[in-house]
Image 1 (cartoon, rainbow, N blue to C red):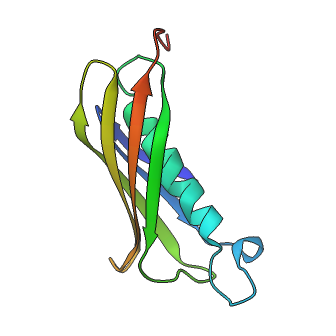
Image 2: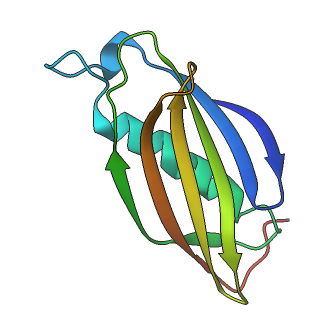
Length: 114
């Protein structure tokens, strides 16, 4: 994975589908797509110098990714309260085709990152 951009509550990460990520049907295993989405979510909800963890998340797979596809994860903050937040993550192929959508719910613990 490569971190492309970070602003408060928003992150872009890219990942290219490698041969070890492909399952028996020739598509990228959903666990790798989820890992990309979860990483973007984690970066996005930790941009305020407060230790923030996942409280829950769900993912919907729309289209397959295949070997060699360059995937782009775009995480964006939907809401952020005193301790909780909601973040949406779009996973797209480089051609803009939607691969998956994830919604993450975050919880801020009582600690700072720095």
